[in-house]
Image (cartoon, rainbow, N blue to C red):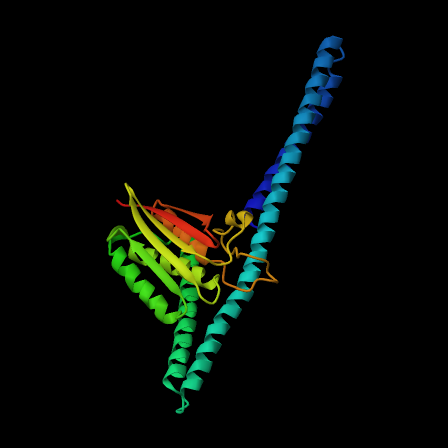
Length: 298
């Protein structure tokens, strides 16, 4: 149980103690009212009963609040446990893929197509591993409030063109369309790159074998609007309210086909908020998901 729940319990216990002391005083005081009128005595009894009703309401509200706090802690603990299991899997899988690819590449009788395919798989695995390590480090720094955006003139259009070409090399089957009407933006370069890395890799991860992704960047007055749309499996309305929470992962723990760490969207949302921006998740037509980001230009 974390500190907040303990504090709530201590405060509630202290209130109960004070309430019983007050009641004891009032009951003892009633005995001293023998010389007073029945009206005064009745008024005092009604006041005690009223105080008792308020006490019960506060006690029930306190227990409800403690129950809610403990439930949230249990849920977070479960997510952390699932995160540790997932991270172990996420670290092992790309390492194994890279190892197998490199071992196969040592063979001399491979044709060019096979060699290029193995190299692409190794690059893909390395990208996944690098992203996971970055997300773990970023989540730890966010927990310590160790991030302050270092705004600079960032060549957004140039970056996105390079990023889409890079992803096309790593994910050969991916179709990525870019429409960027904004050349530069005033933002933290590292945070912005992390935001795009997380969202684009998610879009590819939760799509079929031939991912189709559209990136659109528009100038909206004082804001720059960035939309990343895919045609993947989509996200339910209920989960849209949860996806930016730390360790939360879409889908059922048992049936989930994509494991993930549950950190990417959390970090993305935090970085955007540090820029005084906003992010929302909507359905994409005819299927899939789109994330819409608004970042201030200044």
